[in-house]
Image 1: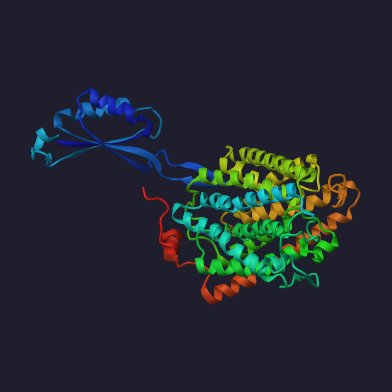
Image 2 (image 1 turned 90 degrees about the vertical axis):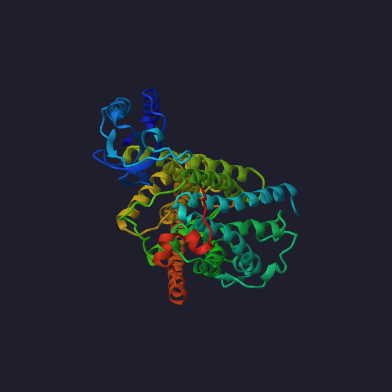
Length: 112
Length: 407
């Protein structure tokens, strides 16, 4: 099993969610996060004084899936989250040791 | 003879001016970080309580009571002794004396509240409270007496201050500079971003200030008639013009028009027109507003260059805007608008500008030096600043045991 962690632009979340639903992904967790990469921050001006805000708002999506789905999920996220401009985000793939569904105690593939 | 229309108008104006202090609390509260919003609001709100009590006990008597050598009122009217329901002709022949007293009381309230913007986010509450009472007694009451009290020496020179350019704005602006210099910068000022946490709150506060200012300025006519109308319209015109010019200047220099800029410009215009509104015509009001917006914007930019942390720009808006307004009164005052006033430079009386300049310099000097002395003494006795740890945690939690937002 794998966990896909994707950092995306906030306005893309609905598109990504719909696209993942369409390929059969039934659950995900999202978090509002802040960070910066090559995009850097933005400028804010208060009473003529300029501040550079380093951390840009992003959304982090976490999806845990069966190994065979990894390539499709990654492709789907790329397709639905891409704008082609700097700051589109990144996708990380992790290995997961174990998954348990709390309600039934099911483990592994059945639990995701 | 009491005139009921005048009395009604001034009572309503009093209520409008009262609303300005909570309005100021919101104006300032939105500009600080969320951990300090209650502490900031409290500094204005508690002044409404403490100065109202100070005013009826000894403040009114010191400011407007029987004159002692042009310098202060005596304590003959302590506790409003002899201040009753019949008019006191020295101030108004048509208002009950108590009406005049409570109207003036609201001015005494908002003035020290203006200063709180200079030491926002770092002052100990107890020290602040004591400073406020001492400042009202030793700075506000005397200056108010000099300018407005019967027998006051600046009033006798013929200086014009319709609604408080020197008494309210220059005195608070100069004291704010002393406070900002003495208390020092906020922790992290200049190295980490310190952003306003709720600008809609600030805009609401600015709107309430603008609204209340009609009472402040038009009410200062002390009668319900043409002079009040002139002051009312001049106030609105100057506020609008300054809001516009600040916005445009910021747009040119920083690339975007900001809501905080528009709101700040409106307040700058209101400050600028305050001493002038009952002495000048509407073209002059427009010019005063236009200049106030530009001048105060650059005053605030200067602050960043000079490096002191007048956190919410009391010096740049109230000090500079008030000084401009007082001098502009000496330029544009016109006896055709107010026969009880004087003509300014542009109406053939250059001497008036000199008198205005003197009143500005004296007010700045006295307020600045007295505030320095008071704050230095209080710093020595009880400390001005909260501990660095408390400053990081915020005033709300450390001074008041509360948090503003539990989400």
